[in-house]
Structures are given as C-alpha cells and as structure tokens.
Image (cartoon, rainbow, N blue to C red; front, side, top):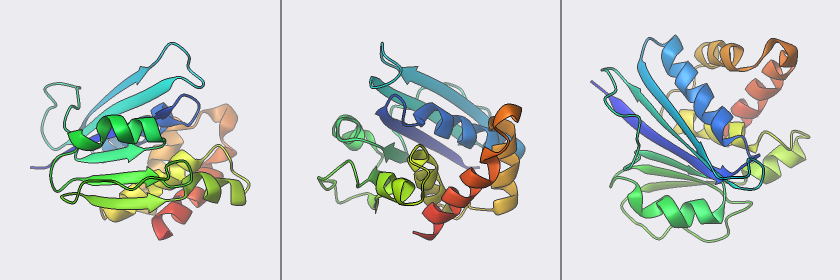
Amino acid sequence: MKTTNYLFAGFGGQGILFSGKFLAYKGLTEDKQVSWLPSYGPEMRGGTASCSVIVSDTPVGSPIVSKPDVLIAMNLPSLDKYEDSVVPGGMIFVDSTLVERKVKRTDVTVHYIPATKLASDNKTPTLANMIIVGKVLAALGEFDEEKVTAALKKVISAKRADMLDVNLNVMRLGAEY
C-alpha cells in the first residue's frame, strides 16, 4: 500500500492548481484513490496559490496535506513557508530560476530545476509548472508517456487540445533535466 502526499505552492498564475489537477487525474487514470484540494489567496494572479494532492492505493481520509512527501516550490515565499513541513526522507523540487537560496534541510532530497528559464527558452513561458511536474514524475520513477498523455487528455479542455503535445514536450524536457 502506497500513499504519496504532494504540496504544490507558488504565485497565482504559475499553474499551481493545474499541476495538482493533472497529478490527481493521472492517479485516477491509474485506478488510484485521489484527493485534490486547491487553495489560493484573494487575488488569483499574483496572490499565493497552493494545492494539496494525495494519491493512494487506499481511500483518502482527509484532503489536507500538512506533511508532504513531495513539495514543489515555485517561488521563495513557498519554499520559506513549507520547507520545514516536508517529511524526513521526502523530496523538494525548486524552480531555481525564481528561488536563489538553497534548501537548508539535509534529510530530504532536493532537485533544483530552472523551470521558468527552460520554459522561456523553449517559447512556452506559461509551462514552467509542467516542466517541474515532468521532473517530479521522473524522480519518482512514474514518468510513463502513455499514462501522462491519458491524464493530459483529461485536464486539457477541448478548445485547448492544441496544447496537448506542447505540455507533453515540456514534461519530457523536465523529466530529462
């Protein structure tokens, strides 16, 4: 039995909620039990945003993630706020384009990904979030293109279908970083 608690955090407009929703749908397409709980400040764009996701082999009792196994910090305030809450042995993924400081803890695995720069360099400036998600899945040994594509098809609306391949490509970029 396996349960993984994820916490995505950053500014509104960085795709935090979309990233969490993608991960939840990926779990659903794999017949897992999932919970997705978005949270954002008074301003969607520019305010703080976080998203708790639980993916489990067993029913999820509470959607609250207070001790994440995996933290995705897309900005410095998020790293400052949530770094200490990650379980010992957990993982922290940092957008090193926007976060200059290093993680202080030594009992977690840390991945620094210049996601915002990679997204900009690849002419996909709004997809830094999915670059990091690609890296998260690769680090967890869960980057399976067929399953990733199935989940993307669930979260990308029909009117944005042209973004499916773009998202898949940036996720590959993150997975290979």
